[in-house]
Image 1 (spheres, one colour):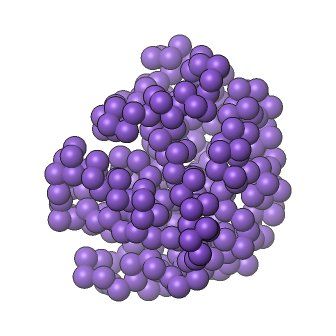
Image 2 (cartoon, helix red, strand yellow):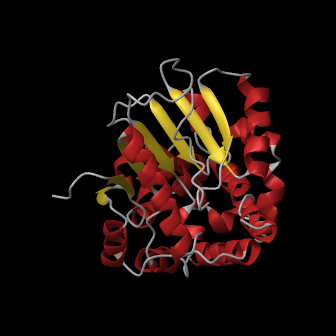
Length: 291
């Protein structure tokens, strides 16, 4: 990857700060501490100049996505987890509290260096929590295929929450190639929220004009349009995923709606958030034969 391309990818990192701002209104562990340390308020003000009241739905959406991934993750028993583009997600800090879990956080160099510093400040160092500078789109696969901290005899769960929707289709293909190689080596599954379609994206933006303006601001800032880089519909997505050698299973994010603490805190009704949550499932991708 060229220097200019790397800089282009690094522009995506402010969205991690934005999600961190939204996550602090929930009961997600370490969410408030992370938002304070990185001064997420300043970044949010740049994205939402009209104020938070116009984006009340953002926090429940972010909370629901995080908790829905955790729900699906709990269905699998692997104690080895690799998170792509982990940004400022607190999941690694939470799950590595269990000494039996080996957790690998990865992101681009600037982001992962910042993350490691913050995590060390909050919880100190843990021998089972690892930080790797990884570009998941790299033609030379730099995912941890042969390391001394992952056991080849045990399966690995790959997580991805907020990466693929920013990537072009050729970049998506390379991520699929790299993850496929990792799962072929270890076994396991890929859990992601990132199978986004134009159909569902337009449904979300049509439901909430503020969200439409918000995504346009993200596109202007990152130089990457989520809408332009998404699948046309689920049929298109499934066809693409099948060609990459994966099968896909879908789980509804609505399953966690009763756990969303940000709803009451922000005065958002469950009824108003349900149509948005219905557009953002969690997916499990496997290398097994599709049924």
